[in-house]
Length: 257
Image 1: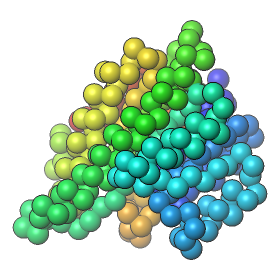
Image 2 (image 1 turned 180 degrees about the vertical axis):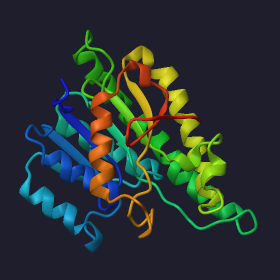
Image 3 (image 1 turned 60 degrees about the vertical axis):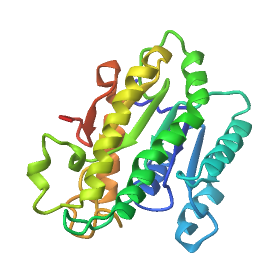
Image 4 (image 1 turned 90 degrees about the horizontal axis):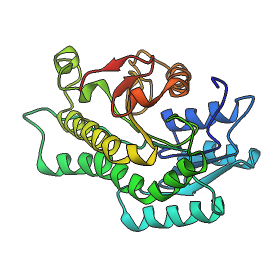
């Protein structure tokens, strides 16, 4: 059903930007999820206060501390979520946490490359691995259901800037070499996950949210977080098996790798 939402959702990077807006819009739906796990690196800092305020008002929202590049933190978060789920599955995982730094072919160095690769590729890989048993559990709870976001799905927040075929469209304005390379690698990770987890009934998709006015996108971006996330949620509702292993944008267009 177009109006259905996943019963249980986990989103990384929720203290600001797209992650925070996803939480807000999901909570505001007429039929919100039974449980949303919103993760961030430092729930106790002022930067996470808006998220914590939402959790105080909505009993179906749990804020979980999670540093996606730290295996111990990922394992602890997975343990806590599993405890709260009490044997139920996780229907939707959105790997949203990501970073960008200014870098050109002249300025990029090994430290910058590895830092972005760890966060933008290693993070989603570690998080998905840790929460995979819960995604499989959700898929098993509805064995006859088609692949979609309400059964079991994993979404990696990617970007058009990671598309090799479309690189020339934005390169002059948005070089950010380390970011582009890390997101191209994230796209490959998504494709591999889609091939591996299809047998488990888990839908795996990479998603370009558009150029959004966040700390990452900058003030000159063309979309507000509200506009981007409204589009993202409409697209997620429409995803099916034919989208497994593809890169789509916030308007539902399939983009080339």
